[in-house]
Length: 601
Image (tube, rainbow, N blue to C red; front, side, top):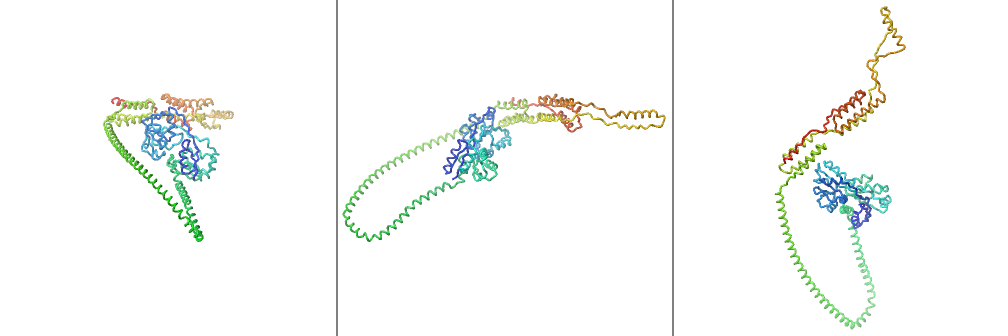
């Protein structure tokens, strides 16, 4: 016999605990989690009205949603991860729901209805956190996914380190954990020792939970994976571990009862043997006494025997009368039974006749309905067609969402494909789809972020400061000539030697630009920063001319005041030039032809 700890939330433990006790186990109940509803806004619930598919992951998700939304759309398709969830849904909503054979997220994703979900609106109703595999896989299948968290799991405040330690002292050896959150609550206490965990058995409801439990600890655990989270599936796994418990108890009871029965027989045999031996020793002594007693009691015995015989005769007569009465009662009961059987047979025949007649009428009615359904032609709703087209037109012309508009037109094309005589409209729709796919929208966000990056580099740019040109190499020869005719040249050289001793004049090969003060340098950088920020603002306002003028002024400022020989200055100038050269068609010109085709319809 094992000691089980059932950790389900309050209200889900009772049935499982009772069945474990019937199997002979000791059971303790201690919910590790409490469920609290989350406040939902009308915008969150609004996605349910337009959903193509709605998935419920637990019965709690169904119950909490029903508290805030008692009606669900009939056009949606509903799925439940498990049978318990489906039963809870059927109890609240009169709508069909589908469940997989394997009550897990993997089993749900294996359904053919969820294999192709591109561009379908899917809503998952669940608790806060969890079911990441389900959401991730549906997104990979290009579904338009929304999640509604209707409740959250909170650790129970009753679970303290002292409580966890008491489980070990009480001999709790088998733990039933139905979620990853309950695993976290159990293992997050300091009182849990890995040496103790390795001696316990853990029952989880999926292989994913088993892998998660194994990753949380560093030792090997005895993990048993149930086929689901229902009471029946958990009990089935428990019976696999203890298959012979009831059989052994019955065998012990039978063996003990047989032992009790056999004991009196053995005692009687021993007593009989002892009596036989004693009677042989005393036989010779009482022979004479018996002969005397027999002779004296012969007369009295004859009288007593007559009385006994008379009483037996009277008893036989009474028994005979009772037998006759019982025979009469049996005959009467037999007649009643026959009458009842005949009545039952007649009623069965009537019911069978009525059932056959009803079955024939139902079959005829179904055939008539099938014939009428075949004769009816599905008519196209022009209002639905106009509504979808207006939605696509608004997306393209007002919101500039060309991909969204193409998706709506694709859905309209699928609708028209089910009706004959719509080929001309479908041609126009496909022409508009190709037109929208060819429209290139301005990457406003990318350009804005690029300009933001340029703004951050302004402070590190190097200004075009004064650079002195090379000194003209003038080698003056101050030696005097001996020729009298060179007196002017000799005078000039003498004057140059005299002046050079007091003042030196250096000639340079290029003009010298003025030097900027610190305040002027700050103003120049602030001006460049202003032009780039102005380009950002013009971009967000879709003012193309102002955008280009701002970038052009930024280019001029760079060329006039900054040193373009520096690599970072040169890279920034090229980046601004590239941004200025980009084509900014904020309002591309195109024409949709589907509207004219719909008017002809």
